[in-house]
Every structure is written in structure tokens, then in C-alpha cells.
Image 1 (tube, one colour):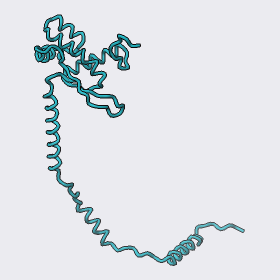
Image 2 (cartoon, one colour):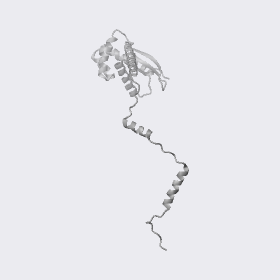
Image 3 (cartoon, helix red, strand yellow):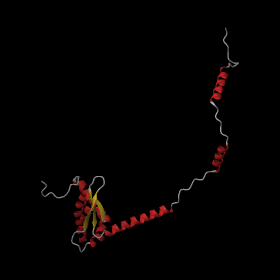
Image 4 (tube, rainbow, N blue to C red):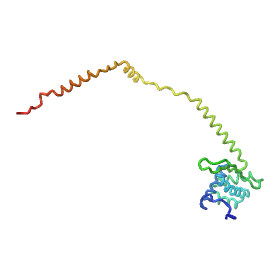
Length: 199
């Protein structure tokens, strides 16, 4: 029985699981919105919220505690300078999990883990997609139909000469046979330089 056994193992050893969750939380604070499996999102959420709570204290000890977990200094700076002040009046519940649906391939349930107030990132991504689609449409309109390759004058002359040249008439099979007989007869004739055997 699994009484009082909290947490998910996620099919990894302790060290691997801890390293994976650290990387997940680091990239989460860096991008403010990540897509992962539902189980991983549920495991990373409390760790991320604990980091925000420490960042709200904004003292040296809490900064060192955060640096123990998040190794990237630029992300820690962002967490203390921009993200923590955003939630200064909020007592917990800084993140949101949105279910996306099953992943193609293995059918794992996917989810989006995002910070509250990061909705503008979605709008920005949608705008980028629309701009790209418009640019692509413009490029397709500008494209002209493929031009016919120009033939050099030398090639033209050759083709003309071939067209003007007289075609060889096919000889009937009887004439061919007569020619072949003549050739064999000439071969059979003895040359004057061949030696004759003495009797």
C-alpha cells in the first residue's frame, strides 16, 4: 500500500528526476510558459511556486536558496527583478496548468504550465504566425511561371541540318543477302602472299 507516499517517480532515478525537474523549472521561469506531460507539470508546479515565494522575500539568504536549485544566474535575476514583484500582492497560486490533449505517438496526456499574466505571450505567438502566413502568401504571388530555357544557335543549326538531311532508304532483305555473299567470296579468295604446301 502507498500510504503517505507522495510524489511521482516518472520512470527515473532520484538524481535523474531531480535534475530533470530543475531544468524544467529553469526553462519555465525563462519562457514563462512551457508544454510538457501532465505528470511532469504537476511535479514542477509546487517547486516553481516555492521559488517565487522565496524570491518575494528578496534577501540574500533567499537568493542563495534559489541559486541552489536554479543554476542559471540570468534566470534568478529575472525571477527576483521582474517575476516576484508581479505577484507581490498575491498569496500563492502563481501558476496555471492547462490540459492540451494526448500526444501523437505514445498518447501521453500533455499540458501547458504557465505563469499568471503571461497570456500576452500567446497573443504574440499568434501574431507571429499570422505575419509569417502573410509573407508566404506574398512570396507565392510574386513568383512568375518558369520560363522556357533558350536554345543556343549552334543547337538550332544542328537540329535544322538533321531535319534537312536525306533519310536513308531501307534496302530489301534480298539485296542484303547478296552483299553478304559477296563479302564471304572475297574472303575465301587466296591472297598472293600465302605459302603453298610443297608436295
